[in-house]
Length: 193
Image (cartoon, rainbow, N blue to C red; front, side, top):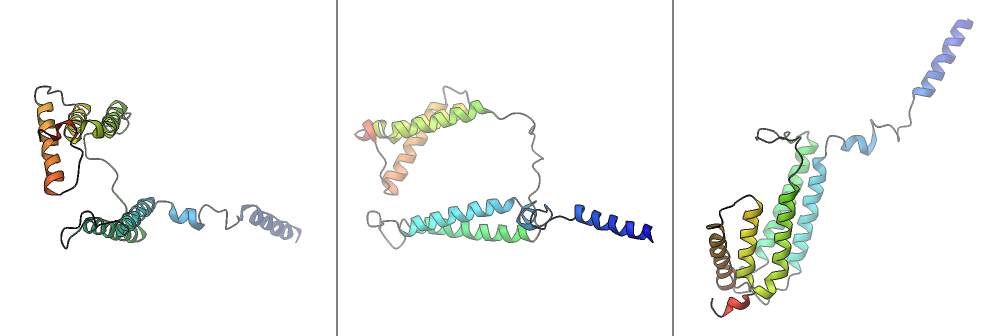
């Protein structure tokens, strides 16, 4: 009888020490629900961007560019709605157990460090374009942007890249400024173009 009484006390003590509070148990609660569902973070980001795009599109002043039934709000509204739809569809897929495939298949060494030189060169080119677009105009700053991006990404065709960049920026300027009526700064080349 004393053995049975001791066993009961041992079982009670074991239950007390191994029993965990449901709020702190890593196997239950919100943390356990989100474990393995990191794609829900992407859903939340897409949802936030979609709401931001739709809010901005619906509050946009369209008097300056309205030239017909399709105005400057149309594309942002379509993109915002598409972002919301993709966010909802991805969330439904993740909640039903869908998972993205692990990265592989490409000829990439995932253990190798990132190429920070390229990232910093590209960031510098974009910042230079932001500062130079007003004084130099889009044709010149765009050419520097396109050529600098090609250089940062590894192209070393010095006889060809600046020519392609100049043609590309000039064509882009004409498409936006003249055909789409989106004013871009012309800079010193405004009289020539």
